[in-house]
Length: 614
Image 1: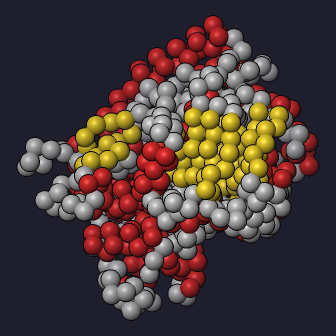
Image 2: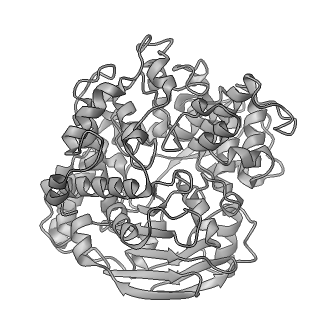
């Protein structure tokens, strides 16, 4: 139960859509979404395949709780070999698309091959077909979604699509659903574009059944009470969104600034949650209201507006007020990483990222690296089409966002990501990335556990694979000292395994500010057959983590890729509580390998593989 037990396999080259049964033996080992999608991908493709070749596959997967009334149960993931990294990619998104897929009758959609011309998938309660997308190719995400709903005369259709960036192969292009929720990292949108797949449009009203409705509803009600009572999920996130972190992280000296040269940003208070909520002279504020994804009782989403007297949007009426206002990672990347402290410029740039489908984290971090290259003369205005890439310049930020979203001019160079761009200009050390994916908004010198998290993340630098900030800064579930390395290997492993289980269930990781797996296990057990306990979920999480590791090793990654840029290992933080400190990855990594049951060179041992049935 909870699983639909059905997969839709779409052969884009042949133009066929066929149903097949879900491998229930795999579902009971990997649960769903991230875990199950990774299992299918690992079994079906050569890990050495070019991510943009027809031999790569793109999988959209839900979890067993997706589409139920468990809080935040609207998630789905896109699993593929990442265009940006060449590593396993699993990019998670909220909104309403995941629920619609589940209610349309499928746990998973597998896209294979490449269509001879642009198409989109239209799926209505089990009836699937590929539709000519020539009229939408070259259109933005926003225009595509509106156009598909108008074409089918159904405003309730849920759409996930790519913008021009995905079509043109910007390597950190996203897949955007519901206008502003995104499967955002690792370049899954570029993979979708390489397949000539413009969009997936869904309509589903079939419902989702659970194993034991009474037990399930009791566990769900208890979970919702816990979320409401928690200071983060019941108060902080609804009121301020993830942007509540901006001033907090800046004060602890862990806000990467100007391509990680600094760890505190003097303009943080100008782009913070408090600044978004503050009234302007006209009586309005940047923040209009909060918003929620399907079944979410947290409602951390933002609806924002731009001050038109400051930043003109006359030619783009959609940009005046729009969902998808700044979240913390985007505000950091577009702001502190580039030194820009202009809230309206950041909001404008973020709207462009949403509309054209580019990851604001990788984009902003890459632009920050380009600004440093420009400062040292490795890049000149001749390269940039006359645009001066100066730290702190809002004009440079917004113009480059638009160029990158269209894959034009120097935006096409930025679209390569910081690793390839910095190599192109002879300064590879200026790329702040792991496995080719740019860092998010936490300086690993001021939060030691995040350094180990970044280095060992299977999809490249990522905070959502092991959010030790929760413990090291927020004290959840226990407070640990962010400036020490002791105990961090065990902390990172515990977060990685638990998060893999949560991602596989079909719910949002933000619930774990209030929940442990003890809260989640009864909900899954009420929904699914299989006697789901906390211990079993932890085993699933560990199995998923090791499967991802195996995929990457087969793709050519080794322990040498579990590394941080030299800047974080050799250049000490200049200010704040971490002043004088570097990240001490070398102290944490050997202990991490040992705790994982891996060899000293990072290879899962035979004993570990046997224990996890891998």
